[in-house]
Length: 433
Ligand SMILES: Cc1cc2nc3c(=O)[nH]c(=O)nc-3n(C[C@H](O)[C@H](O)[C@H](O)COP(=O)(O)OP(=O)(O)OC[C@H]3O[C@@H](n4cnc5c(N)ncnc54)[C@H](O)[C@@H]3O)c2cc1C
Image 1 (tube, rainbow, N blue to C red):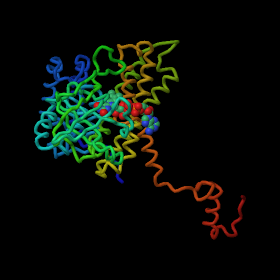
Image 2 (image 1 turned 120 degrees about the vertical axis):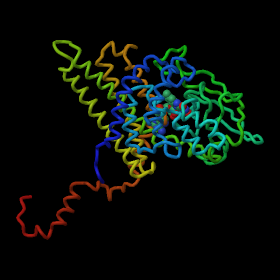
Image 3 (image 1 turned 45 degrees about the vertical axis):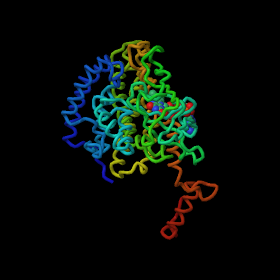
Image 4 (image 1 turned 45 degrees about the horizontal axis):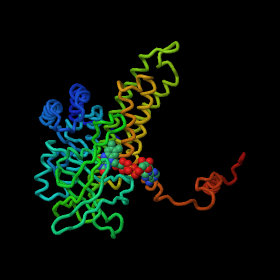
């Protein structure tokens, strides 16, 4: 196995350009545009499309796309390094054409959509002329998809979808929604559900409300759709993938996306870490700067160690994906990265908030938001606990039990084995013990 931590010089040059561009152009827009996905917001439309054009001209648009979708097919390490920079800014993924959930939904459409569906949705989606939504979680449960009750029943050459979905991000602004519904209740649990494209505005699609996150006002600003599907009719060819194949279809969108998300988190926590450092050397209290207090020093040291360890694990996982070209071979690594993501963002944000004192709790600093976002990272695409369970299962799968009541590394056992191994050479040698 070779170890090489260098970046190829050409890509390094691109990354340097991206870094400057994100800091000078994208970060200021985050403070002006309320929702960077909202194509109906004139302020957003005045600011973001011109930046998207610059990115396109530079050849950096939608770089996550494989060659089958007209993308450059960059490996995951290159994409990870790019996403690390994009993570500094909320709108940067949109400016670079790689925002969730559109990136994953485009993969699904490309794999499973009919030519007609692709023509209607794929090209405008890849160009960010429309927005899409992925609708799977239900009000009574998300972590366990086997409890979903939304149904799709065949009616001639149509399917009729009925049920409720929860936290369907961007449902109210989406041109199409990918919906998971039960088509085969008597099949084994993982073959009961199928995936459908539901065009936006289809009669019966009712967004009950847009739920906001904790730091958003109760009377607006949310984008997590609580959606009721009331006898929604879609043509039979709007089923994506085989009947009963929803779980396989859903996996299509998770591959590299988790690594990109993790590296965006690295970019964000590095930015928060810089805020910690600045505060530490700026605030004077009780006879000295915060940076002179050992507990603050511990916060700085712990944060750096955690961020760098997380970054290396993520990059190593990206590298393994490139080497093996098989997501199954890196399932453990991906679950570990997904679980660590929440903890690193949570712990670094909490320290940043604490070290900024009362100002840190205020809406004039971003820490309360980042803390909430850390929980979002620990929920969306599966709760942290589920990923830890997956990781542990994989790590335990091929471990043999101890040969008897004592562990195989029991020192008395090992010493007896060592004595036996060297018995010939030690015969007659005086021993002190
Ligand atoms: C900001 C945001 C955006 C989202 N966007 C979308 C979207 O676009 N489309 C969509 O379909 N969904 C979306 N989700 C939903 C997300 O997928 C669910 O939140 C997630 O699957 C968990 O489901 P739940 O919220 O119903 O929690 P529950 O299923 O009620 O689980 C609650 C908690 O129970 C614990 N738990 C669950 N399982 C286990 C276990 N096996 N072992 C130990 N503890 C466990 C965990 O602590 C978990 O957080 C989004 C969520 C967030 C926060």
